[in-house]
Length: 290
Length: 291
Image 1 (cartoon, rainbow over the protein chains, first blue to last red):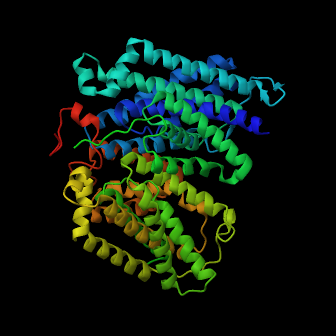
Image 2 (cartoon, each protein chain N blue to C red):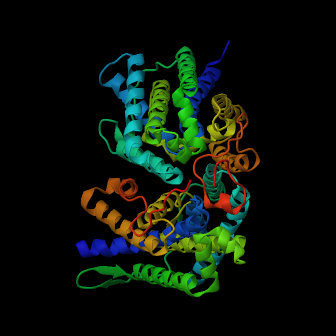
Image 3 (tube, chains in turn red, blue):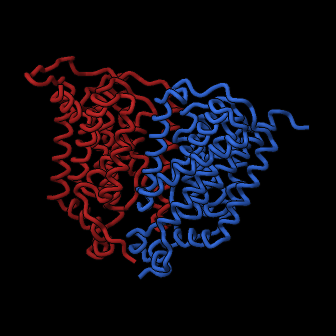
């Protein structure tokens, strides 16, 4: 029972980790909570669902297309709602981000209607029954896809020129710009990658729960942010760890405490973390400069 | 003279003026972005409703109790979390709003998912007008006092304010306590007007709606909140716009206002709302007093 809950928690947590990566990368570079990230997650799920149901595209291909289109959406949001506000007070950018989120969610409600859509699962209902826990084929896919995406991200950040530019920009924008790094391009690339990850998470959750709806991004979006804060915002391994921990905590809370308070668990964790260690589990304390 | 439909719009506008003005104290004047203001409204609505229903208190006493309970929660939330900066605080207020909604949804005494029904209809035009006047009067007095100046100093530059000997946490808790008090008052008026309340009436979207009113009117401008609240209550009603369009409009409004006129219709441009970002240094645009 316990090991089963642990596995369920890790599966859920790996999707939170993917969302959290998008938040944490954007926050690390422009210090903005990208509130519209949950809507990108929703958009990705819708794209994949429509491709699979209407055009009968294979699942993995529609996942890739959904990630690509969502990246474009993420970059567009940055261009329209955040870039003009770079020199504006911080609160202005945050309010603009909330506006983008509300706008996209209601646009989806307007176009698709409030009814949830069925996402037919392309996987067989095969369950691998091991001695201590059972895992279904789709759960295995979620774990594998998440793992490879995160591995790819790690490689990109640590080994490529773009990754180096991103790390430099996160550390110090002025100096990075002086070294000839095009800050605007780095920011666009960050939104591109973060949005693709968010969309991947949305597609997998959509197919896991077999349901896609315009408001599906709200809660996972918030929880992805909680996961990012838990791990230390701006910290990439922290986001992965935070996502997994949050997924496990939530599943355990729902299983052993009360399933009605499932959503409250994440927020309770958030408030406790922010009070005890606001820099998160793996984050560094930043001194406020005068 | 006035049809009951018009009276209803005026009463709703009045309640929204109270909500927007109290949120403006927290977000506009103190610079602490709250996107969970509906939580205090919810607490006030339920506390006053239960005081009327279960304890049989007279209406005005219930209103006061609702506001007081909301204020207590404001302080309770404020004490540990107000050491947080900007975006973190915003997320905590959002989380608080969700927790309040979920807890009320699962409690027996509040009627849970069925909602609280059977409240007497006590809120009338006169009560609302009096409450609006009291709210605006009290907030104006606070803002022109020593406390108000401290709040504005915190918004302009928290580090500098602290350097000048302002106990920033103390004043932020005051802002939340007072803001929550009037939000609770608005909630009490709301519950005794509709006679039925449900936890989902006070969700994230309502908080956003209230934020829209403040932003449209002008952050840090009390009269702006009055204009914003009345405009965003009355115009959609008179145009008979559907609820879907309305929220789409709210989202677009927030983005456009921030781009075109971040100070709102009536606001004055402020040097900074909240926290400095690395970006301000990158852009070469320096705030006053920043090294």
